Image (cartoon, rainbow, N blue to C red):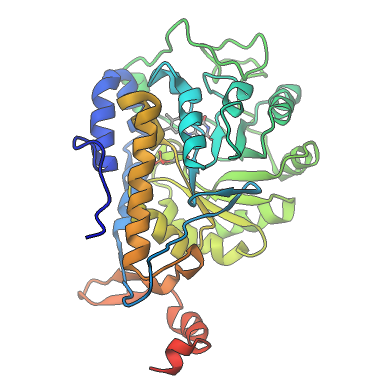
Length: 390
Ligand SMILES: Cc1cc2nc3c(=O)[nH]c(=O)nc-3n(C[C@H](O)[C@H](O)[C@H](O)COP(=O)(O)O)c2cc1C
């Protein structure tokens, strides 16, 4: 019956992984990871947006050899999914980002390391097996501190710089106030410039750790000019900013709302994707993160124009559940689900995934094609033998 194996009957979905991983995290860290800013509207909508769209399967296609591979950061990856930068992996498991990196390397996918990682960028990239790494940068006031992180990443062999642009100030994360969130005194943040107070890296008046809230497109251009790494802007939600990112020389944008941790009430990333892709796709790369919990979510993002997808919390839940093996389990689940979705939608490669595989349910119970499927997709279909025979 072509039934894929599930190695752990307790965890057969990402929802299971979240539940089991969270159980081990305790209240303060569990809520730190799982919650977001204010009333969690954007956090919840990130996943709900995928569920508002249905699939239109195609049948009688030979899917005996589905190929999910693609290219990301100049490297061949086994599927269009990687790990978003997320702070403090060692709070979830002692192996921290090194464990996450090993799981990424085993699966042949890419990983972006947070500025606030608990392992050094060189230790993380040392786990690589041909997969690529990116370094995330939150711009702080002191330019040399930004360059410190950039140069370390270059030395460690990072293949991309991911500049987070949705962080002029930190979102209002109520759980952190309620739980009086604090880091264990032994925790290290080795990628910050020497001398920065690692237990209060994003507060206070230290220009080496205060976010630069006077950060503008000129500084984006200056940063792009100052590194040999391709630069991706993470935190773009509008066509307007995507065009400005392309004009500034970015290699790509990551449609992201920081996993609902910054501006609550902002658009879900899946809802924002179409406008961004329509504005810049083909000119620069368009990636997406936020709310991906199933392989079918990856499929839907690709169908709507994403070149690549990322997950932030999935590896954290995996780490918390069972260290590196838990991260690998999360990846296997998403990989199997993407394979099944592609097979049942009649897609042999990622290029076969089209907007015409998606439908949006309407208030009167009928479905509608997404955007201009009828014009653009039928034009493509008309060129194929398949339609000639209809
Ligand atoms: C605990 C946690 C810490 C994060 N830290 C960072 C960070 O340091 N820099 C950054 O750009 N994004 C950070 N993010 C956002 C992620 O990169 C990503 O955008 C988000 O997690 C994607 O949503 P998902 O968790 O639903 O996959 C963090 C997210 C979480 C959950």
